[in-house]
Image 1 (cartoon, rainbow, N blue to C red):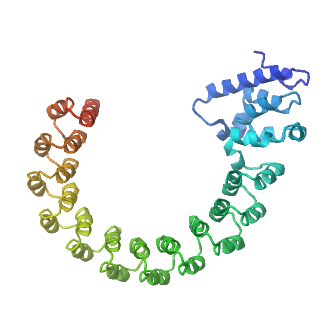
Image 2: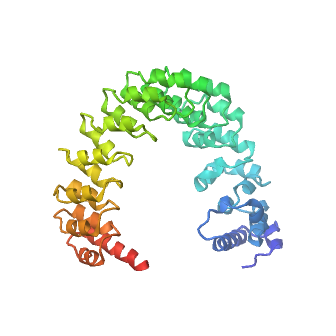
Length: 402
């Protein structure tokens, strides 16, 4: 195939020859950059390559067919859209832009799109196009303002989440009837004044978003700590900006989920952890038992809990002493034994003992553990359970690499 620039630029070159030249050039680019999205390549690099120069010449040739332009748009969408043949082509092929969008969906997220493309997408009956346009960081504030009044909730959500949306549009969208739109605003780094307004929103989901936000004023968090909805209070409990005084109050909350979120805070004071480790609800005790900061004394106590999932949390804790792990190894409950087999501190003797467990879940956890002795892994590689065999063979392979 002759890929000379003169042939590509010649207006007398037949369309079918231009198509074959374009296909050959694109294939050469694919081989040059295997597995890479060519649209995302550096423009200067892309345009300096011989194959690219041929493609660009073909895109400018008035003899190039619409199908060839679509193929070229996969690599050079902007150059195709700015081609001098485009105005006449759009008169003859009214659906060309939509076909190009289907062929190259990311085109609406590109920088420096021609105005006729932007206006076409902003007025298109298909909301998906308008959403993509509203999502783009390169969409102008004028267009974002227009799209903020769109009839589609999804489009308004995209505008609300776009960091380039004008502030007065964000203020309008903060009063939107759709909870989805109001919640979409939280994808931005909001100012405290905005968050304070949302703290009184009628939707608990919006208030929950405020309670989780890293920029929420302290006085709002204190207000939300007394919210009627437990999901909101749980988010306050997990927010690192929440004053420790309110964390202590939430540690006594009537809702189990709130007390659990208190336990999941980083740097939780030891006295709160100790108190919740003795909570009346087993799920709270289980979360406390999994906390690496918990004391050995409490781990010892929780290892004797009457609920298996609490003991399993102790068994999985990397800080649990080997003496407690040895005691738990005598328990036959599959949940406790599976957690124990997955503990990185489980001794080879414990793993050998658990490799005989009747539960395939437990044996699979033993097979995953790289501390398991070689002879045990070889035995488990012939286990009757497919999953156990798979993990045993994988661990054997990993050991051989070492």
